[in-house]
Length: 309
Length: 250
Ligand SMILES: Cc1cc2nc3c(=O)[nH]c(=O)nc-3n(C[C@H](O)[C@H](O)[C@H](O)COP(=O)(O)OP(=O)(O)OC[C@H]3O[C@@H](n4cnc5c(N)ncnc54)[C@H](O)[C@@H]3O)c2cc1C
Ligand SMILES: Cc1cc2nc3c(=O)[nH]c(=O)nc-3n(C[C@H](O)[C@H](O)[C@H](O)COP(=O)(O)OP(=O)(O)OC[C@H]3O[C@@H](n4cnc5c(N)ncnc54)[C@H](O)[C@@H]3O)c2cc1C
Image (cartoon, rainbow over all chains, first blue to last red; front, side):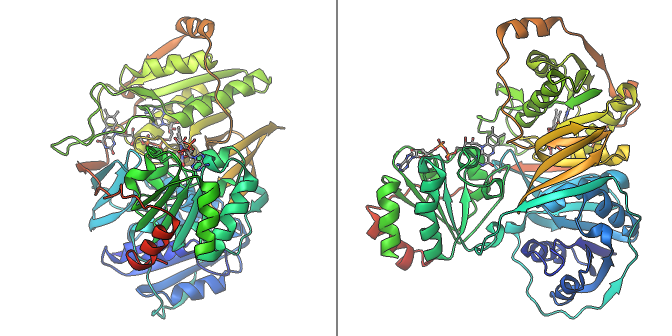
């Protein structure tokens, strides 16, 4: 049977998480169809067609998919669901929003945030903020799955799949978008960045955060992240939050600056390849997971680091 | 307008759980249990709606063993009016089963608004609210950081990966809470005392006519790979040197 992957995109291009999700799908065995639900989304569909391993792109191009609302996307996926053994989407705020609706209406379990595929019906997922890994087996006829992007290397280009137009489902009219305030940044996406500079309450203020961490991120070509405490204190916007209940990241290099290392923060970054911690408290728990810990006042260490790079 | 808030009893967020040696689960013996933090935020929001004259009654519901009564009393102490325990004994409950139980409770209670947590911090499934909305055919607004009710509609600001978005949805609807929706109050001693006298009804999955049989079988629960951390560097020069020549990441 075939596998349906729901693409995350901004109509013009695919989001990186789509490629990670395709990689998870490739472990299942079976033809992979990629659904692009959007409005004027032909460009995103073309990128999907070029992804290695995609057999067919389904393009549902209609105004009701412009905002990617959960009600409409879920209804569309349901209308296409028959004949698929697996339905996958990224475990991003996009996938988390609509996939449980799909699962509920198919009357099947959703398997959230998988980090490994053991077989076509058995998956590994973190529970308790990543302090345990559960191996779960589903007996449902269709497996509805969200995928943790950092656990699967993205598929590269190399495909040339046909793009087939599919009809949209009726507009539910249940939800209206009033506005979006998106963080505009020239930096890489947090979820896909190779280097992340992350700051916590130890920075003391939003001004200090920007003054110290932006030049450091510039030098390293890094994305910027933060602890919950830094977001709650208003230093940075919500989408900077790394952790159990924020973004899960696994860059090549993660610099935690003025972050104590609470369980909930570690859950979001402990799979990073190399972790650097700068903290003035030698007993801060972050040092237990850091490959390179520097006990220092960040106000001195960060400018020195910028100068040395 | 009636508001329903599902609350879950979970391992306290400060506890670092240990995987059992036989890999059948995590060790929950003598572990501190609390209300899921996102559900505290949900109860607080519902109580604020009542205080603002926008809601008439706040009903809290928990599905699980009898010990969930404690969680329900905590919600009553924050200011909920009435509680329902769906006593499931020690049966393992998965999100779809919880959503179906909540659907049955909605049929009896007819709330105009259900406020759930966005995720439970034990299982981290992030499903129940969306599943309930789908089963009811209702709109949803997940990961809420602001909720405004007016003219029979809800305006909800949502925390999404790229920033924030604001939706307008009709009622009835399901809203799930994110961390920055509010800061839950501490229940005062008089309110804790009062909560003991508030009504708490008990029902069961059988009475509600819901099959809660798990759909996923947990084959094992294992320890994640341990990181070998703990090394310190002497100074910034040492750090840069090691990142360049040892880790080779810059
Ligand atoms: C339900 C729930 C969900 C949560 N989800 C998340 C989540 O997703 N992500 C997350 O990050 N947190 C989350 N948290 C919060 C978490 O428990 C911690 O409160 C938070 O991570 C602490 O942030 P912090 O390390 O910046 O602050 P603190 O713990 O206050 O640490 C600040 C650190 O800065 C150091 N410092 C201070 N001044 C200096 C200086 N001049 N130089 C060097 N170091 C200095 C201090 O020594 C300290 O270690 C969650 C909590 C709950 C209850
Ligand atoms: C005795 C027992 C043993 C279990 N063992 C396992 C196990 O070994 N492996 C496993 O994967 N799962 C197990 N579970 C199930 C798991 O703990 C969750 O209850 C279930 O998967 C729901 O997922 P969630 O809470 O993460 O849902 P989420 O979708 O993350 O929860 C979101 C929101 O839904 C509401 N909600 C969720 N659950 C309830 C509830 N029970 N009552 C009221 N409101 C609720 C809350 O508002 C919550 O904030 C067990 C449950 C029980 C009771």
